[in-house]
Image (tube, rainbow, N blue to C red; front, top):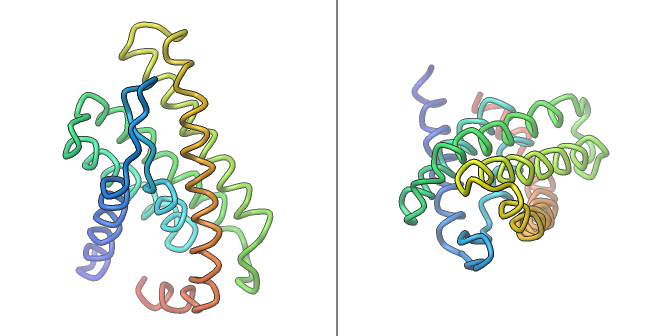
Length: 173
């Protein structure tokens, strides 16, 4: 791995961790929180690809869990958010022409990534709480979190696209 790649990975991990930690809305039903980190995982996956999405999503989100006092969730988060970033990057990577940002492929990447996150936390919650019925109560909050992240992703992503970030990113890799 080149030094430049290592630096980009570190910056993306920090971006996800900070965005997850800075703005947290506690959710009593899940004893968790709604945050903006998912929008960053979407951005990293789409603009930087599957490998960057996986590393930033998994490590950045797990780090945020540890630093926010939810370390019991960190192993689940590492896998769930890492796979989320990888899926997003894999689905969005075949977009071909970068002439448009609002494509079916980017929408599909967001939907699949969010659906995986909701399902993953349902499974993780079922394991941690020893009850899938209790874990099912987290589904609505996780959907809200994912949809909020997707809305932010599409707004910020459009601005990144307009700024021709694809060119900047391809020069970095």
